[in-house]
Image (cartoon, rainbow, N blue to C red):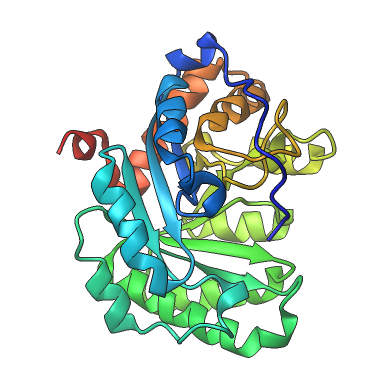
Length: 283
């Protein structure tokens, strides 16, 4: 995972962003960079127009702590799985265990899981086994699979395609930054691509082109905070409020206002994560 740099200097989204209706579909509120300041982080997100957040468990032994966050804050939901970079260090997830976790009403997705060969290619075999178990849990529960893919496009495409042929399932390609082939394969299977702050970086023109070619109804937004802060906060700690900057930066790619783009991606989130629809916030 990328290095987490210092906390921001207090420059938060301007009042324009507060008019947006946004969702941060992927953040890590239990990570120490955010957990130490969590009430203020949640308040800033709300002030920026971020109505709901999904906090992601990456090691299943931490699931009780992540669940507690979702139970404390009505605008927070959660998902759980074993991150591919941790697959060799953690006990192997079981389908039965994931299905049991999914019975919680604020549990909305399976993962994140996937393949990461950038730093952990030596654990390819266990990563692939872990991924297949998570896919089976998504097939069993009907909840969306949350995929992390890094330097493993060919194997990801093969495993997802083979599994889809056996039994269909929902899936989001979290923090999508792979190439056009994997994007096309994912979209052909009916999957969703998630846009993070990476897409706002000046050198990410090719990635923005991939999103521009995708159907608008197959895109959602995320921060992956505390990582990958978009400008003007790049290089510092990210947080859910900053999804507003990503929405503002990417909306012109589709010829939309930030308000219209936020509305569209939030509607897409609601279809993909029905447990986390707005009615759930009031529950």
